Length: 90
Image: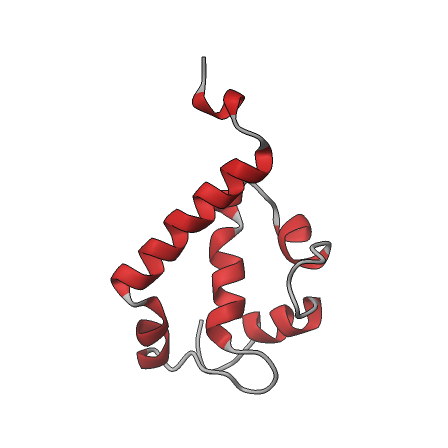
């Protein structure tokens, strides 16, 4: 029996989010992003948008479900598309 069978989908996602948060804090990812010149241009912080994009595959979502159709994130798809097409970083 798989351990995920005993847990609800929300519990599994919260476990994954806790692991992602520990990874971000232990490797200090926001500082690395800043050193790579990935910064806030306007609106929302780049680290928040990058965190959303980074966590999508670990939560078993695709881009549409994780960003465009997701009502839990405070920014919309326009902010994500602007982040992805920013000319100062790849």
